[in-house]
Image (cartoon, rainbow, N blue to C red; front, side):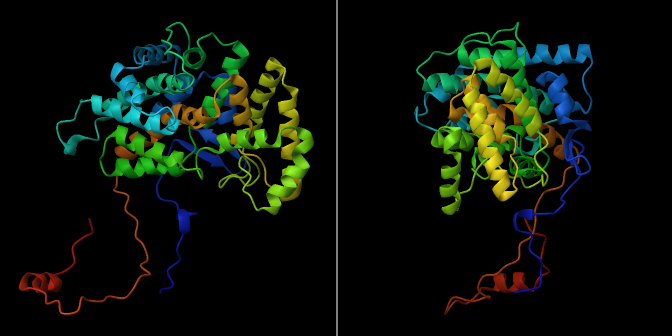
Length: 396
């Protein structure tokens, strides 16, 4: 053993620059390209936020119209993607459906696929691929939920914006503006969050000069893990388990006694509370009023108050988004795929940023296994002896 300091989980390690997002420690606010996310959620359609993440500036009216026109071209669920989803068992996890669908889209995109050497694509190609995935994911997520419910595919509508069309394809009816606004805000709040586990996974894959689709598939795999994604699903399971506000205290007594992890609280980056929560909680409140479900707000407030008073740990974005998605009508298993549909904008922004100033991401490790040992009776040949005497080459 040596005195090398190991940063487990790369905690506190700064590995690169990014101009895409940061948490401002002075205001505890998440910034996208310098804009506080709560301001974006309150004023911008999700298409404008996607444009901002990809290009660095909010779009003009003509630029937004151009992105919307391009997004509408790719909304429909491609026949081969639908066929691939239909081959999967109905009880497969929706994250596996989405991961498979993205792989099929990537395999079907043969632009620049002549050899492994040009797999990474040009900046123009990668922007086109980013828009294509962003446009296609609502159909993939919506069809996944409908398929599990025994319902038919709903075709997209060109007269609806991104968020309204997403809800249309999922539920087959036009959503109330209050619901569309709440959903749009959630998409903006989930779109980007610096070098989280899935984003860093995407950047690592990109650093090998692999293609954008492979990087997104890897990010989906990272997000499937319960320590990263899935917390909003877990929040709904907790709400269902508790039942009502009156059951919070005995439930929490038992949960803490059993040392259970209470999902929806705490965050590795935010120490004074997740700055996205007030915006999402306000959206949840509008949904509670719209659907006349005061018991949801009562349970939410009771659990938050009791947990914060006991542990001093505040809610993260998943805490209000879980019940909000439930009120809208999404199945609990669909919550993390919704995360993908939003975060693909941030992922692809990072993929393009990594590719523009690339260095292979290859950290070192500190070995703590057995000392060098040898197979009894083994005799190296001359080539091995000669190789051992040469200067070591750089690692692959």
